[in-house]
Image (cartoon, rainbow, N blue to C red; front, side, top):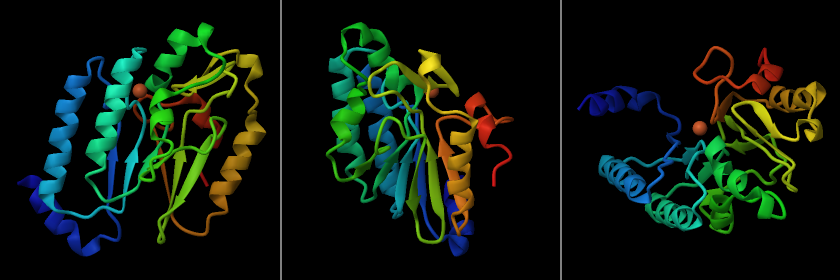
Length: 215
Ligand SMILES: [Fe+2]
């Protein structure tokens, strides 16, 4: 009811609609299935078109490949009921599988992304090495600041810090400045999205301090 009033009041000002979700992570898939099926059915009942779904990480939790596969299949099916592209940013729990099995893995692997990568609805960072990817929404551009990783598995980032072999992390202040320059060069309003916040927000990411002050 409050939602209905808010939507009605905002309606005349709306250019685009984006559904932002994250952290479906559950150790037991049936709990996540309960949450996701309810959320999608609520969403469909609102009968509102969205232009994009931004999924800001932690889609799964833990290292059980069976659970992760079940979570992936369920999320592809449920979000597949909504006619909008999904833009994914990596979060810390997406590395749970790798962190647990790393000694037996030839390199970085995120099973959820592996599952989604060929699905046309789903858009992921083009490479594990990418710190950001952009989505042009017409009136504005979305910059998804994502956790990133060494394809060979020596390091990965979570919570704005480098895990694993920190000395092998290839990005210095000047590399962050290049991303900053890319954002500054966008001739439209920009919305940044991430699993983490900038300083001052909830669970701020120290590596993001290199972007401050924002353009
Ligand atoms: Fe998280």
